[in-house]
Length: 516
Image 1 (cartoon, helix red, strand yellow):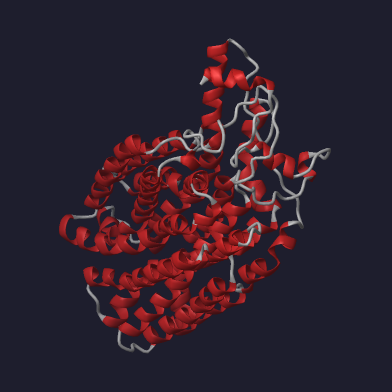
Image 2 (spheres, rainbow, N blue to C red):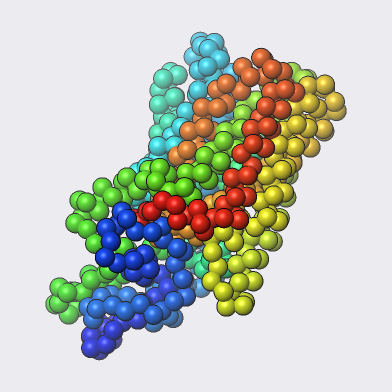
């Protein structure tokens, strides 16, 4: 390999579709970084970029070390493993919920606020974890961050299982959530590293399933487990599952971030040739300390300085918060209105599970259609192709409709299947729009996809943790009918946001500049 590289010293090395230097040249030269245009999505098939003779890049378009060229079996195994982790850690957020009354009794506490907080504090950890996880993955690589997060998640879950008082349980629940958000934050970045844009739909569907489907399955399993073995065994089961996954990740996961792989190649070439000039061009050529600071603040800068991330993150955060109000009140509603037992009340989450699966099937079939159509006629796809009306419109309308059916059906104690139908419709819409928005952000911020998703995760986790604290109070004040009508109206009022970005997104993305 070294001799091959030395032979290339007299000619420009051709860039690869993942070469991040192109991202800088596309954004304009002669301007301050902060004044450059918002990056258009990278053409991951363009190999026309020119580099200096000692710049390390791929050995042609078919370089086997390029993650885009890995075998399908390796790609599938990595994405499947990451997707399972994104299912397991949100599962832990709600699997514990049915055992909360037992916890409060054991620790001699009767506060309703603490009862809700001991569940939602885990999701609050989801809000702060991405601020560390995303920049770490873009500096150190994806693989070490996965391993560190998975290991810490298992450790803190063990500490939850042996907690001797409520403050200890709350503290370690927060840290378990903080560590468990790793795969949720950088999984989309891994998919962007491995899969070209025209084939990302199915992978993003699998990855998007975890944050929605985990909290649905959790209470069902947790209800029966708590009733049969006690609340501590919820944490032991999660620990065992997390331990198995953590070990499996060491064998399955490989580094996928192009800059990290190429940097290792540059280090090897410097040793083999005794030439210190071999280097990797990076999006921002800054001193290490300044690069670290840029990476740490990047998720917040993306969230605050770009209309794309700001509007979409606010939209998803509100929907996520409303959905979590449903998740945290299902047990109370179906026990009080329909007389369900504790274990049977857990089955009330099945409606959301059915809606989520239906939405995933719908999104998987259609998410790549517009991108592939453009490629077929030699047009360059745009991120807005991830927000077509035939996906966005049905999902945006189904969410409020589902809330109306659920609320009024439960209010008048119509047969329990009616509010279940409402949860099916709402969950169907939420999973589709969540997948559309996440894929849109990945295609918009390809180089910094992890930071863009981190910005989105921070806001949605904050509302997912805080809004459920007032869910029961709203139902007590307004009733189930008008309470869910309020939630449905909120979802209806914000529905134009993804529709407008789908129609006018390219113009809106240029409103506020952002680079690295």
